[in-house]
Length: 168
Image 1: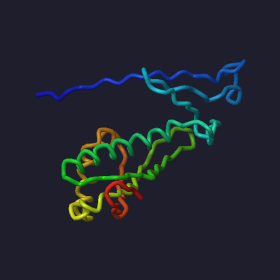
Image 2: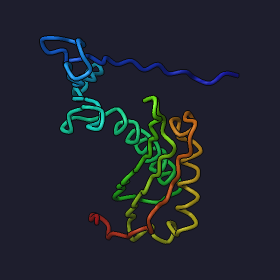
Image 3: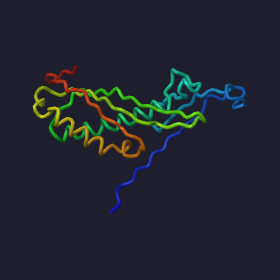
C-alpha cells in the first residue's frame, strides 16, 4: 500500500535586476519575493555574506526555520495525544553551513533548542523522560528532518510550568 502524496508549489520572483541585470557579480541585487497562493509574500535575499540584504529572509534562515516548524508541529500533535497541555513553545534553532573554497556548500547540522511550557495541571504527565520521548517521536516523524542528509539534533530545555490561562 502506498502512502498519500502531497504536492507543494510556490513562486520565487527575482526583483534585483536593477538597470544592468547580471552584467557583473556586483551589478545585481539578490532581492526576490517568495509567494504562495493566498499567503503573504516573503521578502527574500541572499545571506549578507553573499551580498544579500540583511533586512530580508535568506534561504538558509528559512531552511533552518522549516526544520524547527516541522518538529514543533509534530511535538504539539504528540503532546496533545498524550494529554500534555502545552501553553508555549519557543525554539531558538541554529544551523551550520560549510562553504568550500570553490563556492559550493552544504549544511553540516541543525540543532533545535525547544523551550516548552505546560499547564501546571498536566505537569505530572510532562516529566523530562516523557517530554524527551515526545521530542524523539516528533523528530522521527518530521517530514523535513527525514529528508535531509545531515543530522538534526534536538536539545530541549527543561520544561516550565504555567498556571492554567497563563504562559511564561
